[in-house]
Image (cartoon, rainbow, N blue to C red; front, side, top):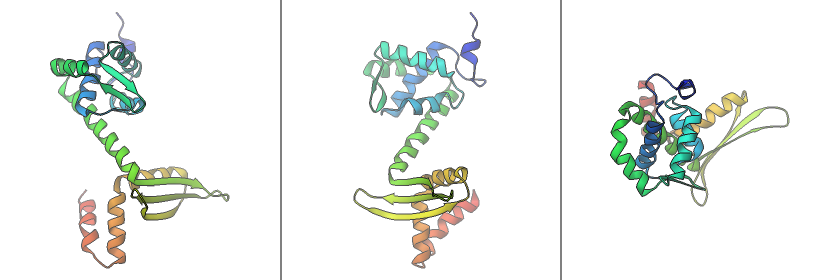
Length: 195
């Protein structure tokens, strides 16, 4: 059988065996122990070139048919039976592949959680200029808010991602500067310099 379709977009060491792909998906959903959206799942396994996109979709459909995975409005979740499959067969999948997929999934879920607190909005004014509005919101009110002119949309999108990731530290630095409390920002700046 020709496996070219299975290999398309898959890095060396990635998975091309359909059974291993199913096991990886079960392992990932079991290890996360929470629902994950289709886009997040695609980014975790296909975006890392661990699995071919079409083969992942095929494997996911089979897992749902076999009742190892369920789909809801929150995303895909592992069933008790799927968790048992993951536990019994996870050693058949490369530890490196599992580690890449899991790290990416955790990063994506952390980013999504940060986005709920560290909010951004990019808009273009009537004169064509781009602006990035950033805020840190609590359940009841905005703790911090700023609006920054941006040279272009690409820069605005990059800055928005950085604010989502570092919004708490940015707020701490700004607060330290305006209250003349260098201890609030010196550690952050020191860590950034060492990177």
